[in-house]
Structures are given as C-alpha cells and as structure tokens.
Length: 171
Length: 90
Image (tube, rainbow over all chains, first blue to last red; front, side, top):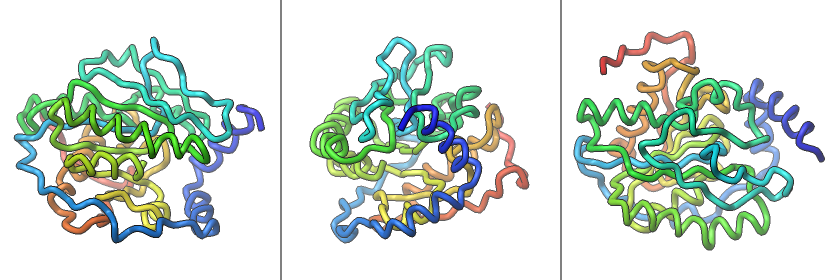
C-alpha cells in the first residue's frame, strides 16, 4: 500500500485513540516474558542525573537520511541527535501517525527544550550530549535487527555518554 | 519502544517510557511506564504548551522513583485541555 494510504490511516487513528486500543486487544499479542524484565536500578536524585531522550516518533536531523517509509516492515536504523541541536535542524519522517502538531513544535514528541529548561533550573543535572530517534511500526526482519543489533548500540551510546536516565516516548 | 528501553536497562540505565495506548502498554510493557491519555503525536502535550509539556516530562521523570517493580505502570491524571497545568517559571 502506498504512503498516501498509510498517512490517511494515520490521520484517522491519531484522531480516534479507541482504534489503537481495539487493534491491540483484538490482535491478542503480548509479551510472554514479563517476569524477565531487567532489574531496575534505583536512580539518584533527579538533580544529579543526566537525561537522554529516546523516541520512536521518526525524529531526525534535516541533514540525515530520512527513515525508509517504503519497506512495510519499517526501518530499524536510528538517528543520533545532538543535545545542542537547533530546533530548525529537526524534522520528522513517519507515515504511521499524524505528526502535524509535532511539525509545529517537536517538543510534543521530543521534549528537548523542556529538558534544557529543567537543567537550567538544576532540576536535572544536564541534557545528554546525544539522543536517539528511530521509527515505530517495525516488524519482521527489521524488528529482529532492532532487537539484536540496534538496541544494544543505542544502549552502549547512552552508557558511554554517562547518561543516568532515559526518557522514552512514541510518536 | 519497549524493546529498546529494555536494552538500555540491561546496561544499567533506568528508563521510563511514556505511552498513549494503555492496552499496548499492558501487552508490551517497558521497564517503567507512564500512560498519558493524550493523542498519538502529542504525547507530551500540545504545540507550544510549555506548562503542559513540563507536567508530563516531570511526571515521567518522577516515575523513575515511583515505579518500583519491573513493567510497572502509572496512569497520568491529566485530561488534555480540561486541566490547569502548574506554570513553569524558567
């Protein structure tokens, strides 16, 4: 199906949240390994934590290659976004939700300016030097690639940057 | 999203994942989950609604402490526009 159809569907289910709820419930899918969730490390006080952003909203720099919207399995690659990025240098490529609001203000899905303000007030230690954008709607081999390779690379990058907590969000 | 968040937790970095689809959070829980009754594409609030966005960001960050069991979930009380969000003074 074409990108125009995907965008049309995205506009519908973005406006009617119940469709998403129904889709998940009818699909009957769920993770079976809930009990094997990682142990939770207790974070320090927020004021001593460096915070990173991880978003599946399709956020990337205008200078970076857009996510592949032609592969029906999605695109398991990620884009690294500098912490000091200018708002004018950010864009969104994602046909599977309506990002008209986030095109006006990317903080709707990638609250980098809000984090900067928290850092200025010392409510968090600082903003991570690198953040990560990827796209949701990933299936099949692309999901395998995401889980087996990309996710670990993302984790290692945050670790090497001394990130103390990650705020993750969808589109 | 939860798959990547799990990988980040595996290297020892706490994560909190914001969601706007509660059934998806229940079926595919991330290590810590904040459910917000907002629209897709406006997970942290409306464009240029700084107070609203700050409220959600802070609730998410505070959930790092509040959620004490793996896969735990907190539901945000916010009702989109029908809400008085505390003003954020920079």
